[in-house]
Image 1: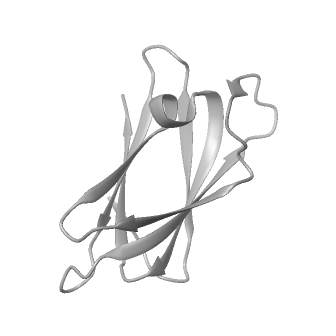
Image 2: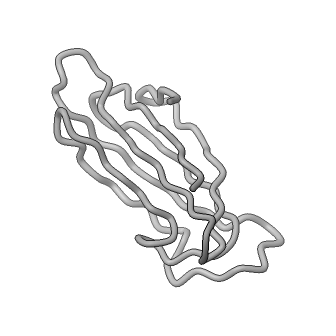
Length: 104
């Protein structure tokens, strides 16, 4: 798990081949008191990618993390991605948030 503090976004590589390889991220509120956090996710296609994606990866997604729960982002299932992308996680409120990357 890597911590992302408010105002200090971090980038994470992701790969999904549409088959056996799938990348997931669990994002949890690691702040004191568990007050919840608000995060913004930014998805960017990597240069030279030969895959495809149905989403517009220039869009920003803002999500609330309810205390004692986590946000799961499944690159293949949720965003129908095949190929390489970069996920940027930015904590807007609360936090820090913990980001756990799983490559299945």
